[in-house]
Image 1 (cartoon, helix red, strand yellow):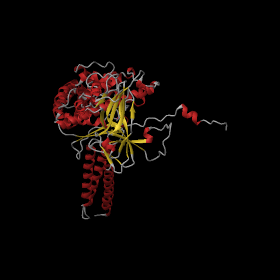
Image 2 (cartoon, one colour):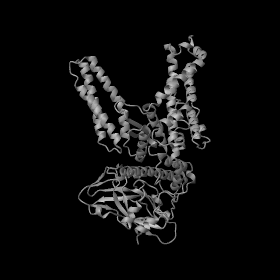
Image 3 (tube, one colour):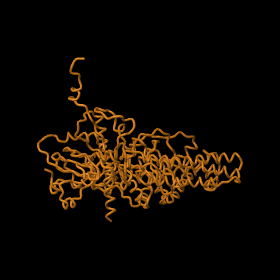
Image 4 (tube, chains in turn brown, green):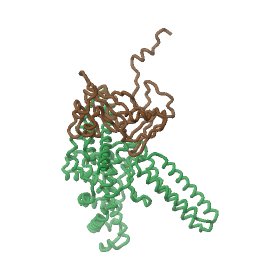
Length: 207
Length: 424
């Protein structure tokens, strides 16, 4: 069950007291609590940040698992100031980032979804992207234009929403989120090989 | 027009066209802040004006006139090109663009006017470029961070030093300081008159000190060195006033133990600068950094005796007058707050940084940077959850996270300022 607006208000960090990472839900810049109370929505709206990342059109012929090329080799950054925009053309894909820095306590997880009003205009944000308990940093957003009209992405615009859920059970929930700790820019992350994949790739019959 | 001057005019026109095309191409790029674009537009209009003027020279023009115009245009191409380069680099994605807004706010507060600020990177590893006042861009302040450090928010206090040069020149600090410096230099020459006569091999009465052209040329150099040295000290003290201990650490980070150059006579010895900063910090009630002064090499320059004397007098004057600069810092700092205003929030920000949370409500950039330095100085004691076991990689990752926390805090500061301004 997603947390209600009332529950969210209880969990949100006030920005003044010392943050309690096990309990507080940090959203910075701070959420307008009164607005959230009045809206009584079960989700938090997040805004688009100023950094973007696109895949390089030259030299990168394909993406593959276990690729040790750097983010800079595979992609390039873009910075768009407030009151300006990044044009996302039909069938194009760009990584954006939330303006908000999130800090999830160990007993909360979240799911990012797009805003329906943008979805109806063709802007798709990765559906049901999970945010692990203990996550901290800005969220990388995968933005795609599946419509037929170019879309202007303006930093500061409300672009997505998060539904929060309680997490049951014990465990070091933070470790799961550490690959993406504390980034303010959109990142590609790593696509690692794993032992099962390696085993599947080995010859079964003698040569 | 003779063939020779026609050819020079033709060459000059081609060079101007090349520069104009270059600036036009650069204007087609994305600029993260409008002041860079504005500066390029002004430069473009200037060169287009030069081109129109060159075109207006007809065949009846005298050879000397044509060559003089070509010479002037050449000089303007040479003079402005480094700034075109600086403007281009201001758009480079290596830069942490979040630094810009706080610097622009600081410039506006210090100068008490709407300043045009270009924050860029420099290939030279001098801390920041000297803000040459360009005739074509009189209201612009150019700051160049060494390219390898332009993502590092911990060096931002050094921008206050650079802005100090603009304060010194535009707000009348120089005019107030110069007569005192001049009087001090003359006093020092009078008190060492026998040495002066021996070193420069003349036998004139001390009463000729201010009237004899030969002697004036000698002490004028000491005066010039002392003026520039005191300007540097003023800028250091202004940096310490705005950023407190963070200024000292950023200075040490970039300069200590030395950058390997021979000491410039236009600067006090690095160790002396460190002493002045340390004394000022103590006056502000900050704890003494025990090894701060010793971190700098005792850099000096080998000079012939007469030159050594000229520099020595400037050094003594600077050392004697530097204490008089602190009241000038308070007087001319405009609307910029002293670091002490926000320092009560520093501890809270450090705690939040340790918990991987940026500053959410603090309106003091100085408090954010000082908190950043406090955590940087104890980086090895900062425990972050993670699976990186290698110490070096883990340390690098912590520095990266700290950088992002500070830069995000700057962005939140900008966000709040913009929202507040809109609400008023």
